[in-house]
Image (cartoon, rainbow, N blue to C red; front, side, top):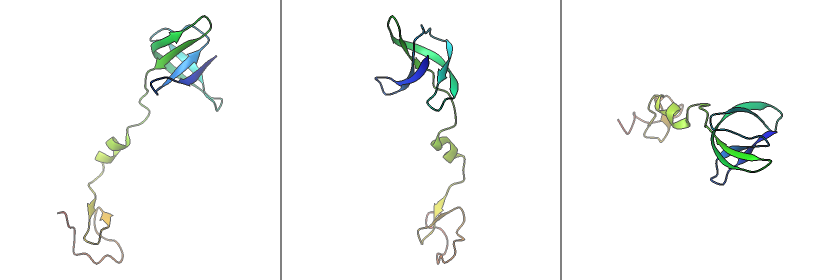
Length: 99
């Protein structure tokens, strides 16, 4: 059986009762009962009945920073509200401070 394991460096890897080889794709059982295919990037340690390996990181979704750079720049009006355009109800500003 192959499960996820936290490695000494803090990253996630896999623990298996089978011998693992670099580049090998293996199905890993998750706690919720589902499974996921992972690729072995490095064998960390092994013994007679176990093998622990690091896995390649998968590009699941872009990071928050990369999503944020694609959105328009938000500005702060003189009343302190952030907006793309200052149309906030009750805002008494005369435009944006940082134009």
